[in-house]
Figure 1 (tube, rainbow, N blue to C red):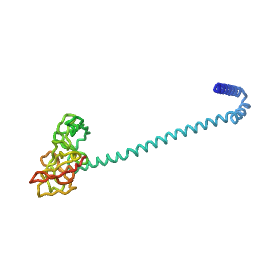
Figure 2 (figure 1 turned 90 degrees about the vertical axis):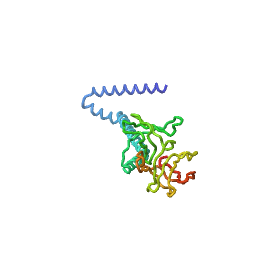
Figure 3 (figure 1 turned 120 degrees about the vertical axis):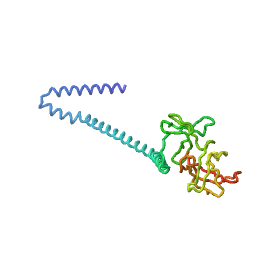
Figure 4 (figure 1 turned 180 degrees about the vertical axis):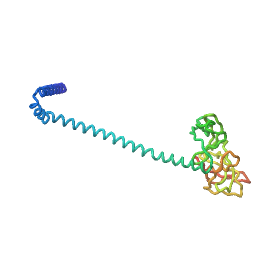
Length: 250
């Protein structure tokens, strides 16, 4: 009922406005201008005020939407900035490693295999067409990851250092000790550590010593970080020492 009454009122108001407009148009010029001025000051003034307020409301709403969009952009930038900084730092480390080793890289993404018995293999998104070769080292910014075992035109399969077939000729960073690094085949959590075997008895490595690839054999360029010495392992070997390493790439 209230909406019906309101509708009738609006219709009557519209009719009155139309009638006043027609009357105003038929008046002589001398009478029409003062009449129109009086209408603007009285009847039309509230309507003009409503239009003005509506325009202010629309501008305020648009300004609010722009402010919210700018705020969301700032928040998004603040959220992504640390990740971009970490990525940039990682790329800088990778470039620094390349400069030290004096050889280039073939960039690739790695996907871990979920098949039983292949937990320590990864599929790389680059193959022979990109320049990947069999037995090429796989590295990250932190150091050695593994070795390419199978190469296809568009992808490769690599073993990572916990794999039982992984081996690399290694040395201490100062060149005072040499040996062969392979996976430590112990129980959890030591399964995810490395061993440096065949270190001569006359050489002693202290915890914290950095171990890098020696370059012997031509498979791995010299100087790739492999791990850090944790402690000496007691083994049955008589003429050589074995050391437990914490991998450079976890």
